Image (cartoon, rainbow, N blue to C red; front, side):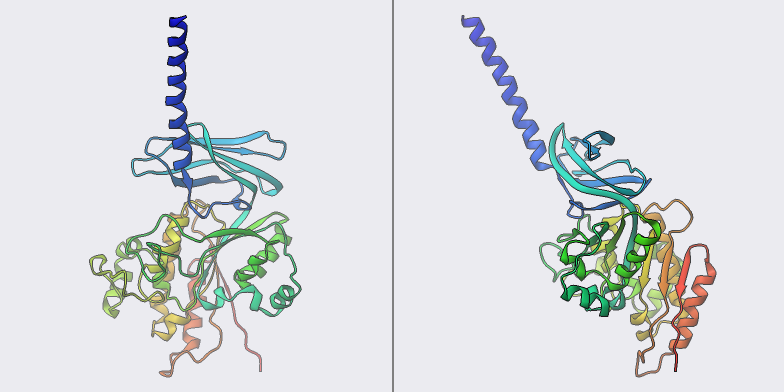
Length: 373
């Protein structure tokens, strides 16, 4: 009898020792904020899911279809810094909905539901891109009717100015891994009306033409220079572009970065650090870009802008691991406006914008602005 009791106690001790460990791993592992229900991954590409967990933990991602059959899976170990990136191969785009189950050391810690696969685009730039759907003429009318948009439109709404160290009054010198406040919404969620109007009408066309779900990473911010969207590493690695920044007094040494005193619109790398690198594990179809007003107002020449644009495209191609040549960018000429009392020439800048397209026509498309009397 005594031996039997001892055996039972030993088994109970082993179970109790194991369960808290698995439970602890399961509760400490978490995804970054830009993963959630209703999100979209690019079709026929590696779907990468990132987050944090105890170093050495085994992280598993399992993709299930509507019949609860396992379609794809992947596993990895959390790195020594407590981060992980687990992936699986995405299916072809379509109207099937999936569930992704995340496990840490075999204990489920997150479930993503209503997941779809299709084409995913970045929408970036300044005020003309940020301008919300709710304020556009047709969008305003739809919003007034509380009209629900397509359930197959999936948008990651990124805060205009994300928090850093719990505050929107501070800015990081280094790229961030997460974007506090980022949220996925479907077209049926009225919050979608805060997305870029330009991005919505672009996505609306794609939904019809491609006959599959379309996703948008909505990251733009009004008033921003192209300099704020390019990484320090990219700038430092391009002698000509760096010289442009140094000669104009716009280059900021990392050691001189002040988290409290900065210009969110102008300072080099600032919006890249707050938004772009955190999203690097998304596989994207390309980027739509509506920007340049700030740079013409600051007196940038078309040649200087072209060099920065080329660097941005090359660096984003690498960042998002775009494999079929350069990552496509669709952009527009600047709208007619007297951008400065000093009389900077809009015509010259818009000619430069068409020249930018001619330099790499296989990966760039520009919309021309036509003025009628």
